[in-house]
Image 1 (cartoon, chains in turn purple, brown):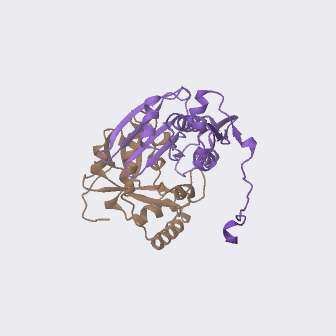
Image 2: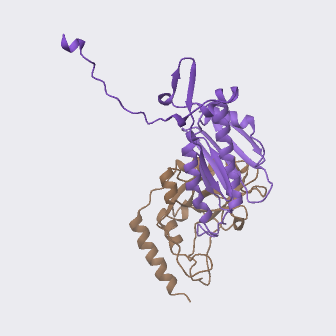
Length: 201
Length: 179
């Protein structure tokens, strides 16, 4: 009986989440925006109010430009950091006459990856898989996504200014092709972003 | 290598049933990301003049391909090229000819007479000739590079590295006899 009526044994553990970690969405867009969806374990409901913990954005610096990404895209941010290695390659890096690239071309490629990854994340709640950013033998920079055995996208950014970046993609066992070009630096092409959401997420 | 293969001279088209070998550089970053061979291995540099350098299987062994590379000097130096970081992939000539931007695959042996120090004779050397319009950044480039790379992925050539080291030693000794 004593054990039934006795004070229940409780242990208290201070949460690691503090008041400053919570924010209140300032408008409807922010409330529903995917950028503010927090992992379930940090979601706290109180009466009719829902509080979200704001994810700390990541930043990636390419040249003098700083890009900001939601924390959920950390793998992509890490890969861009790793890929900066190709900026150290000098002419004849393959011992067969290949050319070096330059930071401007790398920036075009990195900017493309970040812009599309953020767009797909914010609009479709989808985190893109990590691409492979690499140098080509004429100093161009390629971005290559492979998702499973039969789905991939390859886009090439050339060193010359103001040129189109051509891409080719294919998906499924039938390798259904999808090809076109974008203008680097222009707003996200929604058709391409939708393809990426459907096949590279 | 096949001694009974057809007698071809420079510029002749290679038989469709044969294969050519492409030497590629595989770095640590590739290995970490498991993207071997990477797309760049089949891309062109301006010096290539729209032709991808390969070796015809009927005039070489895989080990000789790599060893000739290791017996050659780096561009404008008297330093031998590192060869341990290379891999070899086979490309079917029939497959290459199916690509819309490939004009032909031709035999192009490199024989140096008189010998040139740091340049190893290559009786297997051949070229995949692309249409003049193809550069790494033309509209056709991404599709072409992706398809060649995918084909190569399934055709990695096994190398007997002990044989390669021995051959490289011989090639380099030979080079030192030239002035």
